[in-house]
Image 1 (cartoon, protein in one colour):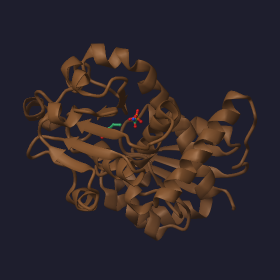
Image 2 (image 1 turned 60 degrees about the horizontal axis):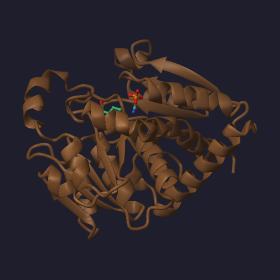
Image 3 (image 1 turned 90 degrees about the vertical axis):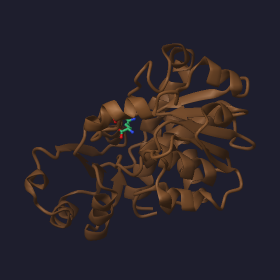
Image 4 (image 1 turned 30 degrees about the horizontal axis):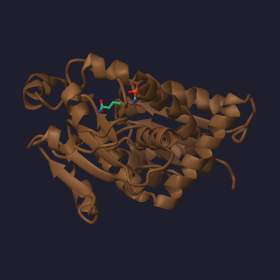
Length: 302
Ligand code: CP
Ligand code: NVA
């Protein structure tokens, strides 16, 4: 593994290795065992969109690994004034040991990786959110013990989260139902990947999707960059909500995962969110551990 650009690029073995290392790093952190795997290394973190979790977890994670994180707002970089990503990649490769980038187009992340000589980590694009889904998988395994026989269901927009969840959960052996309205389906490349998995279903019925589910996911109806579509989206996603009725259709003890930020009353009710807050904030915490595992695997000389 040279980069983390999208989960489609990773084998199930590589994902399992990251999850195992993340568990170990979490254990060490809880027990005060230092793990300075990246002493003397620097990570540049380019943000073209807002962030709470991604920024803070990468920044503190890098410090905990003994390294140095640089927060690079696109507003302050020359990239924001039109310097090509290809040149940015070649320059940053001369200074840094790794780059994390949050941006709009997946192609920009792929170009950064292709033109630079250091590992690139995708911290969210319009297409996918691989770091988040590694944390989700870690949380599911932590709560359920294993992925064996589990059914996952995603209800909402066929967005970056849906795309990464479908790929990550199917690669780890879970069954998966994606519940999205017509016109807001997951990306075609993800549907093409999923069609080889007999456990994958696509439907527009939340109740049908939730039936027998062990893990329920949702995400915002309007993602960053789509603010102008908000009104149309509120209408299109009406009913695509995790609520008590949906939870009643799921298996007893079903988990709820939300990458956050959440919009209570839209994709999830206040009652369901608060009833599952323990799992949801474990998921947020696990961003730290999962991303530290990614940085160690990519940036430490093996
Ligand atoms: N879930 C997530 O990526 O959160 P941030 O947008 O706050 O980084
Ligand atoms: N789908 C959301 C995820 C935020 C972490 C967005 O892209 O805004």
